[in-house]
Amino acid sequence: MAQHFLLSSQARTFSIVKIAKMTERQATNFFKKLRWSDTNGKPVCPCCGSLKYYDLSTRDVWKCKACKKQYSVTSGTLFAGHKLPLKTYLLAIAIFSNEAKGLSALKLSRELDVQYKTAFVLLHKMREALLETRDEEPMDGICEIDGAYVNHYTRPANNIEDRVDRRRIQNPNKRCIVVVRQRADGRNEYIGSRRTLTYVLHNENPTGIAQIANTAIVAGTEVHADEANAYDNLHAVYDMQRVNHSVEYMSETGACSNQAESYFARFRRMENGVIHRMGNLYLSDYANEIAYREDTRRWANGRIFNDVSSRCMKTLQSNEWTGYWQGNHRISERLGA
Image (cartoon, rainbow, N blue to C red; front, side):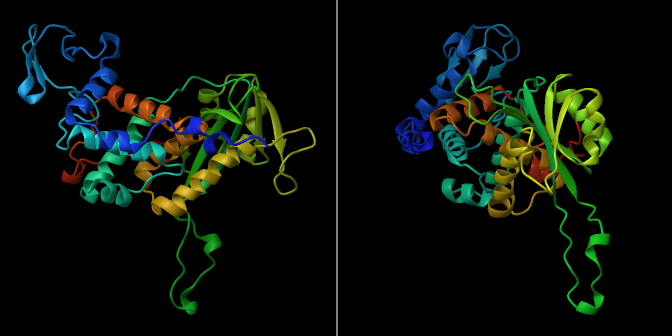
């Protein structure tokens, strides 16, 4: 029997030890090559795009000769105004990349010896980078779509005399995560699913499902779904294949949503075993994080580290996480497509 890829040496192309041995200068050069890859790490003014600058080397800051603005390697990026050493941010990305089912802020705070508040914001900034840079091109080939509910538990009353039938009580925090997965075509290195997109709805309703499908799936694509009524309207646009999960996992014609269920299995492990509580305001970020981990599950950890680092440097300064603990919170949920 062949060895699984994740157990092979090819899956281990990066170690946190490499970051731990870095100097701050090496960490700065690493970020420079990530941000200014087109110029091989040579600074480019984020304000006017000029390549001419004065080198203020004592502070790792450059002054543009054209617009006279000062900037650093993190100016205008997700890590703008950073207070921790750049090496610490690289360590955070490395720890985040090596996790398979998510990372808690408490663990990260212990690993980096920083406050919980610092680790919490840092993790959410990385989740925001994954969400802002995800590929949202419509999928084709064979796709699967399914939904799962979260935050729907209603705690029973303490005294048995006060308890009611909780099946008749709807938790106002209940949300539905809808996942769309594109199956691999079998002609490349991908196994199972190639790409995943996630969305959050109040419930699994026909209108919301239709909007998501029209955004994420090319018309005429073969789509696999279960027997929920919310997917009935998709028959007019897509080649629908339905499976009745109360009877079987896969129909006689091969219809199934096993790739979607694979996503939900990993998400539940993060929800129940790592994070424990997810606020609805940022549920879309958590859902997309697991989508990213599913899509990169067969990547070498060095490739994941480089990809997450690059996404963080391509993401603009966060309006939602800059000053979070001073009261700057997201105003509303990200719902639908």
